[in-house]
Image (cartoon, rainbow, N blue to C red; front, top):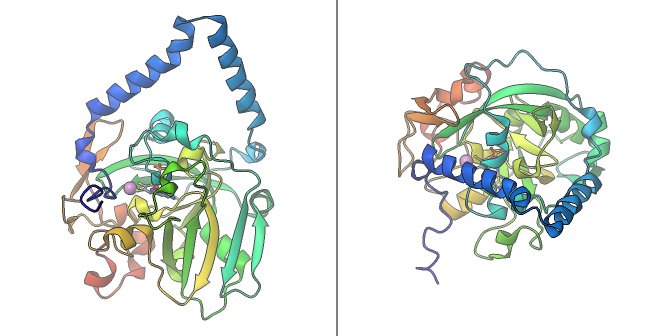
Length: 328
Ligand SMILES: Nc1nc2c(c(=O)[nH]1)N[C@H]1C(S)=C(S)[C@@H](COP(=O)(O)O)O[C@H]1N2
Ligand SMILES: [Mo]
């Protein structure tokens, strides 16, 4: 058993998924989409109509809130990554270990959706996502997104500052961290039926990090509600940290004085630590972090410390680089 699943939990190593493999996958997707037209039998047409009806029934009740006005404070140094790429090249292990999980993720029910705000708070609350969305100051931000696997994107997120959520939750002064959990739904997220993973996916930030102006709660993408593959209906976006910190499809924010232990830290603590700040000078034990493959652009560029967001966050990590800047 152990040998069989040896390394099974490791994040697929990005350089083993070069552009041409991605292109092949894209051709395949195109081919699949063209399928029903080529085989334009009555059955195929009916299946198509059924799918359209299902999509309509599934319409997101928050659609009217988007697009949100762009916050121009956050500038990009590169073009936005193609929407198709952002929404079909994903890490979402609940649905599989390949990048191609967007179809499987479409089965995730995202209404009704409750978010719990618990732990060291003035009063614990459970809030419905649509109530929360109406209370939060929605805006759009263009952020770089750097995965620990050494690829990157540039993404137009919609959502609200995490600081607004923390204020809404009213943590006690004794709270030092916020611990976040993804949904548990093994019936649709097949990987959650594999008990050797420490589900649910968990992540954590210090309160200083969570209330930093860069910390963002994503609820939309490309001027529309968040696609399921990207973590609908509500996810974290911390662009100065490796992507695995940006936990998806959240159901819980727990305020605590204990440092949370994340999903990846539990699995492979020597490779994926709590801080996970992007740092080109510290290699992952199995590959360099000095540069990154810019998805869709076909080029490789040097990785920047804090993913280029040092002006916003460097002050959070003043003293001991071994402790706070390094990710393991
Ligand atoms: N619940 C959950 N959140 C997750 C992941 C995951 O597997 N499960 N993958 C992480 C990783 S490794 C990355 S790079 C980003 C990917 O976000 P994206 O698919 O929107 O680009 O989500 C992060 N959040
Ligand atoms: Mo990642």
